[in-house]
Length: 497
Image (tube, rainbow, N blue to C red; front, side, top):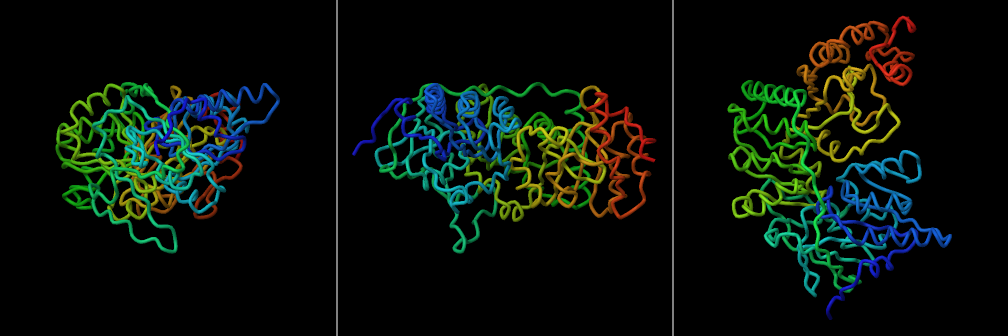
């Protein structure tokens, strides 16, 4: 029996108020584009009639404006997890119009299968190809797609004709067994294929296929500035020194890199550094900079969950697919971010902090401790299980009004126990084997901007009590000074003597 083709509006009628709805993709890549807009339109119409209409949104990571943007602007979201990066959604969750549960990306798929969120009513999945048997080729991001395809009561397919047919063969769809039957995940090097390039979807659950003929825009990252470039230089210098000291094998180790300009600066630096041998990547996202590394031969292989390229880089990738096809593999998020594999492969992980404190604790998510930025994402999946865990951030922002190194983080995402190295544009703090005071002294000396060094040194002298000598009454004084004065450097320790 042929699967029917339907309009986006007809598809939206299968989504009911209160439904749990899963969306394919990881970042904007592979994320649906027309059905979520139609769901938002339906929500507005229901609200105009005085009827309630909100859904619970589950995704692999962040989505796009068609999902998080349209649905939040339509006041159509009750609950959201595990990660977001869209401005309207961010406003909605920070005002508590949307209930938001920040979560490690590796955990959501299995928690859905375990039934922790109730049953999944609908899955909306973007594909490049599908036949009447339900054999599908996914788009440029996988996320939680294999799980939502398995457990959803109803499935809506977005068949996007703009996805290059050359994407066939780049996916490695794999679902681990759930406890108590789970076995080891048999990945022993980044290039190991363990699943199928095709995702098999039960055609009996597919209520319809919606034709889509446009691609979501992915803008390139802004050009690297002096600060991000210096962070990249410092990371490369540290890794080179570790390699020469024999603390990293001569063959090097697979790399994981977070998203953004700092990550791109680091990868660019690795590509130019002649002391760093060619390496592989086992990560959740590959960006434009990875293509250049592959073209130069510096990156031999990249296992990922998403091809998060700019539009220009995406065109270049598929134009030269025969060169790249044996160098890239896309996996579900619970595999790309799996702690077992991270520990086994011995990843060098590089992630970005919003702020760090002088003892090595990291805040990745909350501005001034209260306002959610995006979410913890996959940083915890990688950091806690790394061979070598590196966090980086600028030493100051807003022209020095904010120090990104503070006495105590205003929100804790990664504790000192998971952070081996902190790197800013000022330098490198190797925290391994140091007690709290030694960590603080190392961070202040090497990572803090000169305009804040004395302030933080003086804070460390305020209290000598306990192994971690915090002065609790003063621990968040930097943040309070910024709220009251707009400038952390105006902190006055004499108030706390």
